[in-house]
Image (cartoon, rainbow, N blue to C red; front, side, top):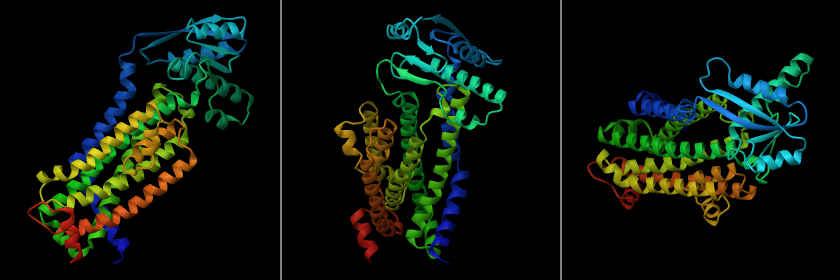
Length: 398
């Protein structure tokens, strides 16, 4: 049996065992409930009526407004939306009204939406509503004319959004959602699936199953299969949660889904894999050092503290993604999985920093895997008491 075949067997066993466990099922249910709560609770507790003051300049605005209201007040929606239209004779007058908050925003010629602050800070809900209305008008026009540009319409924002404060609208609501949501998912995944690896290794030592497994597999094959198996489960849950969130966003109209920056989602996925790999190796090695679940908290505490530190540093990076702390922690492997996706979501990571950070992370994972393999080998067959790292290394050399 080749090494890869052995790893696949261990990986398959982990997937079967963990997917049936109550802890995994509970974690999936809790994650889905949290996503649903974040998306739908604001709608449930929203006021019965939503009212906007919208300034308009030029022609072509009424069709967008009518379409937006038709979508917002479609059958089955409890919240009723209304828009008071206030016409202005010039762009300057309309922008002054928006700047002084006399209106929530200004729609110009049915093509441009102007707000006072950054998107998500002012006019965010109204913008999303008008974007959907404008897209509906464009699609109706294309269908009527038989044009073949539907794909382009569906994959781009129909209204140009301009902020009077000069803030870059790409660094607002959609990127904030990806930054905060991705950070929470990464943090939960690292602790949850790292703990599953730790628990799995400890349980196998406690009931002596590991002795049977070592008769058929090498220690590094057991560690690799365990990490890959649980990691695949975690990745499936991670992707499933993101897809559910995107569908929920589309249904609730919280933001304009087609405007979501795909690059941020891909970077988030990359760092999920890298971050999980690093912490999984550390959790697996830590599990081999103890024989009882009661002793596991002592060895896992330093790893958990590192993850907590990375989480709070990333929270700071949301408010100041170009600070010295944010830049420095971009190159530190345990904190990079949390910090880099947040900085990238706000377009604050130069390409060279991203490349160097990924290279350092990959190199660290390779080195940590070799070191963890030694610790795993040295601690796996030591029963009865907690094993120190030095003692595990010495045992592995025998």
